[in-house]
Image (tube, rainbow over all chains, first blue to last red; front, side, top):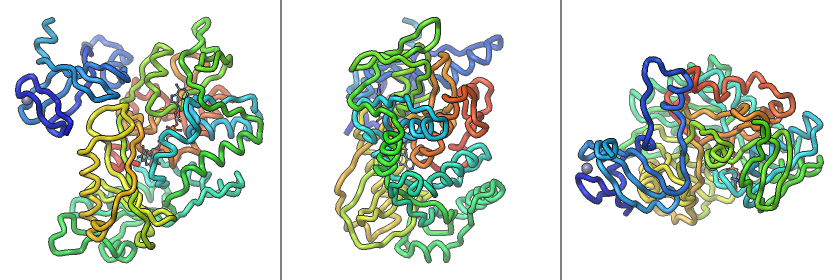
Length: 87
Length: 379
Ligand SMILES: Cc1cc2nc3c(=O)[nH]c(=O)nc-3n(C[C@H](O)[C@H](O)[C@H](O)COP(=O)(O)OP(=O)(O)OC[C@H]3O[C@@H](n4cnc5c(N)ncnc54)[C@H](O)[C@@H]3O)c2cc1C
Ligand SMILES: [Zn+2]
């Protein structure tokens, strides 16, 4: 069983989680160009190796930042989105 | 870059259609060792949008004459493809799909329950079936063909025309001069060329990062399995709209089957248990008799998934560097077309009319070709 750590609920099975988007994207504004919107909406770095991503724990409904490795699937830690945004 | 079906077909058509034989295929492993040799070989052209139909139908027609053209038996078996519908709602979606396909000139038919059970009598008709059979979408010209033969057929034909196929040669970086791509550096040294294309499927983002741009692609594992061989029991390429599992029987007698993507973006070429279990439970639900079969092998490929489940063919942001990627879970059927269109683009410098809608610019203009929403079927 592949366990993923929710910062609120602890280790749970992978089927309780959903990948949302890679971390660090910033939403544009009305003055953003089509290119900037395309980058925000669709383009990904899609890193092979250590990644930082936004995930949702479907069971509690919280979004959080997950650090993991996209090749080995090892989990390195997770933190609430708000904490990451404040840092 | 990339000795999968798309790279090999591109080299072949560069030489054959455009007389350009000074071509090198750079493959980090062995040819056909990526998704081309890992896929479940369903070929069909029953897509939803006209742009997609133009692309996949062109490809199917090239497949139909490929054995002869390459003098290599690709074992194309147009046994018919069936998407089974399991409810009134599924049937409405099926009817909408068939209508769209017929308008696009594709040989699609709406089957009722009786017609479905006539072509696939083993389907679960028990009183407790979780997914009862209501009908389905049939394309008579769909089917399967031999994946290794497609890779090897194109490779041999390209090689005969003077193409160099270099295996165990990983592209590590790009030679960029004056803002344009002038070649690549590889694990076996530098190679210079003013026209470079990448057809590296799940590893597209890694290479594009080296060239300094990102792509609208996320890499996922997609799994498949085969059972032990048995006598002929299934002579169509079958997909269940309800369970998401699809299956066909190989010429050796193995049941080849798979399902949806793994849930987790991944570069691990193996697949996680939840998607695996889901696929198997779908198969057993559809075919209770298959519960007795032993699974011989399970594997995964890393597929390059775009937001609209349509491929990207076109120039990259770097002059001299071209893209053929984003085929995701369904690019085997498109190998002849992908190769033809990429060769056209590289040789002439401009799009073929079929590849134009699949340019990278659609993500900026908003003209997505959303097959995930349109046809709702992968592979
Ligand atoms: C389990 C599974 C089932 C599928 N089922 C179907 C199906 O039924 N029907 C269908 O139409 N499609 C199916 N697909 C999708 C299909 O397999 C792919 O879309 C298609 O094979 C892609 O071909 P390609 O040539 O682009 O990629 P690949 O065949 O993956 O070739 C890319 C090559 O690039 C090489 N490469 C990567 N990085 C580098 C580098 N840096 N330098 C040099 N070489 C590099 C890789 O080693 C690889 O050989 C399936 C895929 C999987 C995984
Ligand atoms: Zn939680």
